[in-house]
Amino acid sequence: MTETLKKKRWLYLPITIISFILGIIYLTKIADYLTLPFLSALLIIVTFLEVYPDKNYFSKKNLIKIISALVIIALALWYQVAVFILG
Image (cartoon, rainbow, N blue to C red):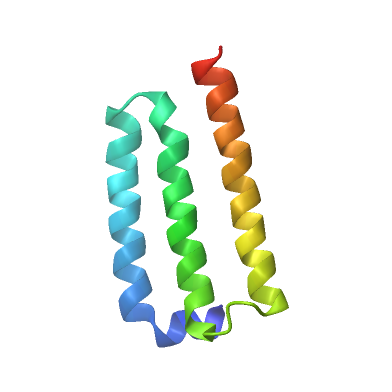
C-alpha cells in the first residue's frame, strides 16, 4: 500500500481530504442513524482503491481485503437494523 500511495498520491490525497471534510460535516449535521451507511460507503471506496491497482481481483490478498470489508459492512448493517430500526 505504501508504494501505491507514493505513486498515486495525487489521487489518494484529495479524495482523503474531501472525504474527511464531508464526513465531519455529515456526521455533525445529520442524525446518528446515518453514520454507519456513510462509513460503510467510505470503506467500500477505500477497499476499491486498495484492490484496483493490482488488476488481480481474485488473488488471495485481495480476496481477504474484499471479504473483510464485506464482513464489517454486514456487521454495521446488523447493528443498524438491531439498534435503530428494531430498538
